[in-house]
Image (cartoon, rainbow, N blue to C red):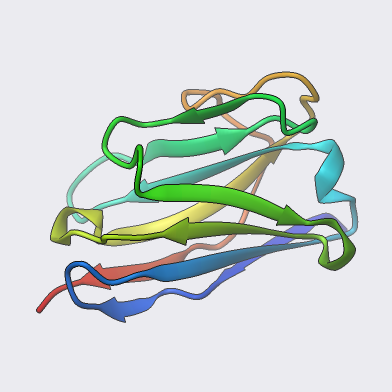
Length: 124
């Protein structure tokens, strides 16, 4: 059974950092495009960052460009979202999702499989 599990969320002060993890089971993450999404209270879910299966294509939402990065640990079948210089507007539930795309990724794609989400709160 294909499953994604996010972790690493929590409460952090503005300017702080967090690293979220997305662990895959039942499939190999390195063959899939990975998307990170977030949903702030009272708002629609938005795509913030994605990378293709090959890693050759990465897209960022303007709101996180220069602050968030994505990486993979193939041995651990895990994808990470490194978030630096966090702001209160980064607060929300963060989700990872996968799509069987090798060469591209999109922030507005529907994605095939989703994790359950992890809460990130940025507040002083």
